Image (tube, rainbow, N blue to C red; front, side):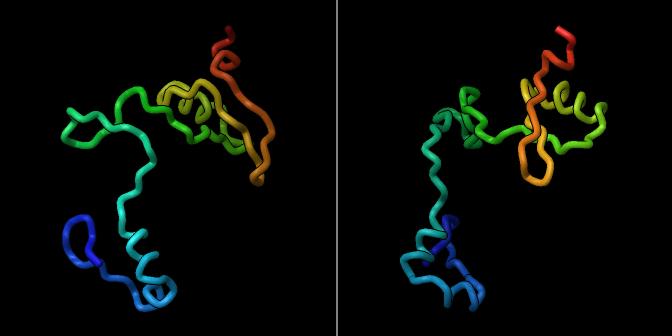
Length: 99
């Protein structure tokens, strides 16, 4: 089995014994999420039209100054407030701006 760089893939003994050869081949393959990349970009950076599917999470008890920083620097439009993995509520940018 070979890596995407062309060299052989080395697995620890305990990992190599847990999977079949077909499973190890799948693990070594590059991950394809079905998101088109800009064909003109040599760096492989995604196009600006790509959607960020990761939610913006703020843990309950986070200081307001840090919450404001998340919205202003990172450009959040909304953030989900959680505690112990449970959703407590949603903060919207308009709530912080006062609009």
